[in-house]
Image: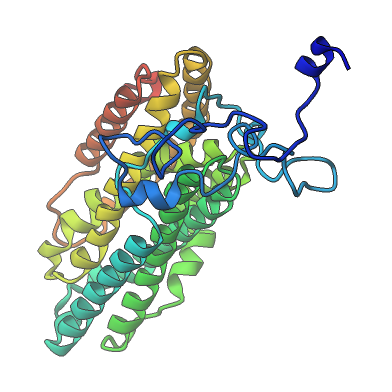
Length: 361
């Protein structure tokens, strides 16, 4: 074989020193570049845990799908990156810390429920508010479950362990909160004579108030691009619909209905979203500012926002009748919706996108 043939022939040897890999010349224990001065525990247990032939696997993927698709593929999203391994989750959450935080939240919610029932709080709720919790908070738990299953599916396709972790913890928080609401409503229902714990499902399936929310979530779940799902959940649906209902409705009006326990339960989801949002903004900002593919990604993200944003805005507008149902009215839909749109504008601006026209309509 000539020197030229040797230069262009694919390298098959797995012997030490046969090829140059990322970090081959490193004299440290880590073969990646830390984000800070030295690697964090989060980086030690996530970076390069998921292999990449471009970095280490000399013989390419050991296992592939029957059609030849590799174990993980950059083609599973229309977004592009010069270096998928550059991303680090803002909350730096990994398996152990995630379990610890979830356990803390579950314990907190359990204490809230126990204390509320022990003091007889559910029986002091305004009757109109009890029906809202039964029908509409009971319906909303299905929205959280839908977002959780969508992100649970999306996480499998992330190209790096850091991206997978961020999407997977997002899914875990959504599924846990759906369960939180189910258990909470079931528990307080034990103290209320006419409470129907199954009414939420009926309203989710049949009530016109919730049908556009269902359509928005089912569209997210039907997307085939895993980053489109992650984008639609955190950048679009959460600020325009989920926060609108959780914070702009439930948490704003509950105290006036003599309900101090429901906001405590719902507040856990608001804390979850702040973490999920920070992780998502970090990733999409990184992609939007990519030196090679930034322009392509910004166009793509704008298309995703237009597609899912129109559905989310319609879903939010169909929730408007909820604000007129409590007996004591201390908040208005128009104010909550304006705040939701401003929140969404701030988020897309942080990513590096122009504010979509539908947020100003």
